[in-house]
Image (cartoon, rainbow, N blue to C red; front, side, top):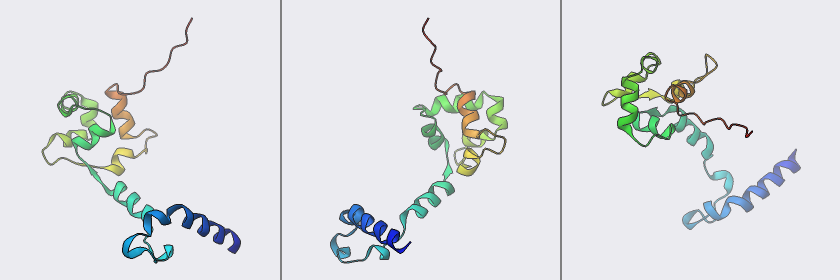
Length: 124
């Protein structure tokens, strides 16, 4: 396992040193840099989503259109998206992505709003 660890460190050094070892960090060991993936993932998962963020996730360019869809759809209201209509309205990303019932709130929302990818039809 030590040989594998050395091979990984050598490959890692060759791959990312040019990006990290600059300026005052030129002579710093890679092991001294903070591990970035956990921080990025944590921030992403803990993020609260407003109407604008939900629109971006759905590739919806019009906030007004999305707002109108949420206002006029009972299922979206029951799913808890009505809170996004308030000026300070936010939902947790964990809620948006949860698949407790087998389908996430994001998937149900996309399906309800007909934002899903159309199926290809076979040609005759």
